Length: 164
Ligand SMILES: Cc1cc2nc3c(=O)[nH]c(=O)nc-3n(C[C@H](O)[C@H](O)[C@H](O)COP(=O)(O)O)c2cc1C
Image (cartoon, rainbow, N blue to C red):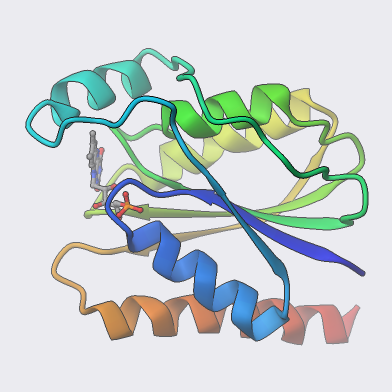
């Protein structure tokens, strides 16, 4: 089974989780990037508002195919209790039919349930199978503990796979 970890990260926390999952699972790692750099002084207004409205943003071309992957770990930060515009765009463009998807969302402290529910619905609408989701709190959490949480997510997946 070939596994891909694909994520968007604005301030690096979701990236920490994505990187540690990919290391533990020896999976390919791909980052979704927005075309326009977001200004950190306006991000809560512009980013938060776009996320709240369920908007998509322009992302750099996706220069990889999902064809050879059976399983995709998909990561997003939580913005205004929603997925990020970049991840909305990625899902809208991706062919997820029959793909198993495991979500991971990082958040300061709340809103992850709502965000992962929205992503789950979007994946279903694209005929993918959202088989699990993980929410990671990052507010005042040390970098090494975020990395550890990523490793735990990957290890939990390996344990569950062993049982099936
Ligand atoms: C625009 C914006 C909106 C956010 N909204 C929420 C939120 O609704 N709930 C929450 O707990 N954290 C919220 N956060 C915090 C991020 O979800 C959290 O810091 C996350 O781990 C950042 O991931 P990143 O470093 O990969 O970008 C928000 C951050 C930004 C920039």
